[in-house]
Image (cartoon, rainbow, N blue to C red; front, side, top):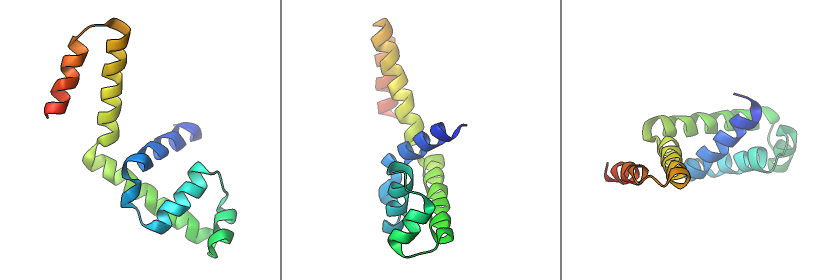
Length: 105
């Protein structure tokens, strides 16, 4: 997975699970992955070491991945979007029926 795809996935996970992170992890994540700050810039802004920022970001990523592993919200979201896209392309109602079945689970 290239860096851009990794960043996009992490941002999608953050959108779903970010509120479950600590305030510090949220702030570091947004600064690094959304505002494109360097570790040094974040460290300076928060008065901590670059290593502390690095550790918090890694912990946040682990939490986001663990939440997705257990809850699978991103996978479900992407599956729903795929079904909607297939319906829009084909007009075949079977895709809407599959979508309705997913919502019943």
